[in-house]
Amino acid sequence: MSVFTPLERDELAEFVARYPLGPLRDFSGIAAGSENSNFFVSLEQAECVLTLVERGPVQDLPFFVELLECLHQADLPVPYAHLDGQGVALQQLKGKPALLQPRLLGKHVHTPNAQHCAEIGRFLARLHLATADGHLQRQSDRGFVWMTEQGPALLADLDDAGQALLNAALGEIQTLLADLPSLPRAVLHADLFRDNALFDGNQLSGVIDFYNACSGWMLYDVAITVNDWCSDEHGVLDEYLARALLGAYAAERPFTAQENDLWPTVLRATCVRFWLSRLLAVREHQGRSGEVLVKDPREFQTKLAARQQVSLHLPIAL
Image 1 (cartoon, rainbow, N blue to C red):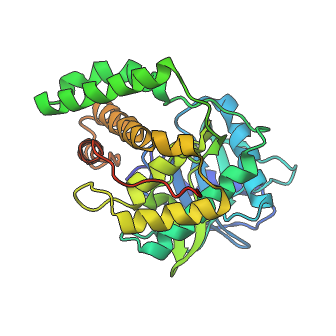
Image 2: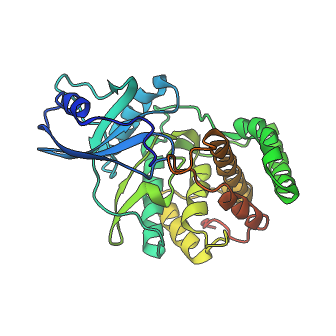
Image 3: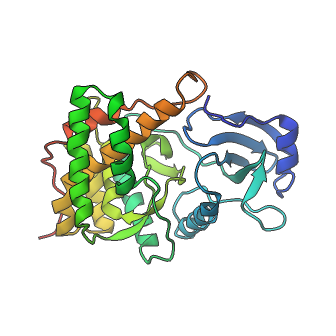
């Protein structure tokens, strides 16, 4: 189970007493997380999720609180922070920053259809439009520079084919860094995988886990999302699903010609980002099998290999 900081019932009951939501009824750890400790918490007047933040600088947490409130005000289905009786959102529990948020209804979709993908595309475009004015800013701690720094140190964990694939991708990213284009920017979710979205049937009911959110290219966020939602079991892009997601996104926020030109490169770069982060997680949690959910790095090695040729173009009005 991916609960890095376990809780006892009495300490949690004392914590939730700060909120005007009634006493604790029940709680359980959530196994799906890979970076933070998360719990389902049932209170007399609300069903909630409690997150203990395990990774990342504490000074960034007010950004996440403000971002989620911004998206909540834009009528997007996100887990904004509950305020305690003193009007405070960000708390401390067991020495860790803590947030209590509404529990969103719905289920994860493991095999998405075109309507699921269209819903995700619309949500992502609306998120970008809600934050495109730049009033919220946070630098990514796992961007292009991070990839070029971490990648060489992880080559030893790969076989010859993996090393050749990663070296070629890092070279492409270095070229991109040498002359960074000016693409449309906003706040990115930066981790909008299937396990971070909830559906009621074909209707999107919630998007969760914004702790990788950062400022960046909107296109980068689209690529992350397409690589997860629109890949088959062999890592190959399902163009039918991808067109549904991209078309719904473009109906809200049209793509530019420059974004289309960079689309294959950015698809590959986002594969590198998650390949490297998963390789690092394997190193960090080696020997803790069963205690921590560590996702398979080979998934993104396979996807990167499949993205060496990209025939799918972005939908752009001529």
